[in-house]
Length: 115
Length: 113
Image 1 (cartoon, chains in turn purple, cyan):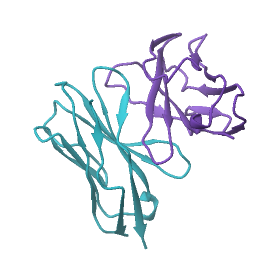
Image 2 (cartoon, rainbow over the protein chains, first blue to last red):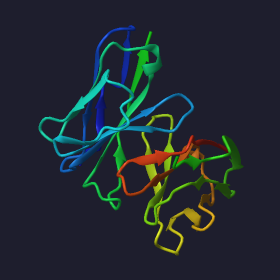
Image 3 (cartoon, each protein chain N blue to C red):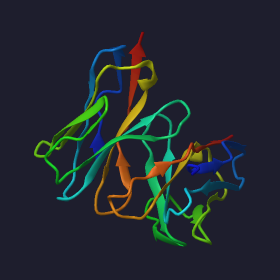
Image 4 (tube, helix red, strand yellow):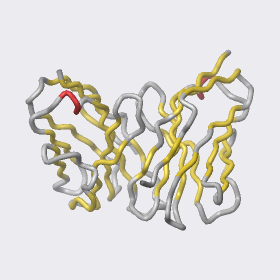
């Protein structure tokens, strides 16, 4: 079936605006992860969902960041009052479950630019 | 902090030659998994190979193999018969008791024709 998809591919916004980034996981995958990749760095964990609930949100940098997965499939990462430091590629991944044996499959990411 | 370190930011290799990418990590866990991901300019992270820490046998996947030294916390990737399509960023990652992946900073591999 189809892989993980993310929309939009690119998003340019102005400082202080609100943005939403969407992730469609692989069908049947119960676990969904968000990572942020700044320029020249490896991805850093933000949050992961098991089903509809956020099982670990310890990577969210502050309360401007929030993510939901209301029906256990599609997830939306929401960023309020964007700052220039939020500019990065936001990657989504999904896996069949949450065991360490379950490989995470990544989407192509959303490149967010905050002017 | 439980970190993953890739000390070489860039490497180059001639087409058809062999190249080894290095990675070291720090962890207090006894059971964990190690991964190499490839990220071409398309940005999508593609799994290259994975290694279970409890397995002594090094993982292989076609032209890709690892040298896993658990005591030294070292996990290098060997690419044999390098191809132009192997050019990309390569990231080493660890996954332990928590489900999240912890990545290194990455290494840019250039393949020269």
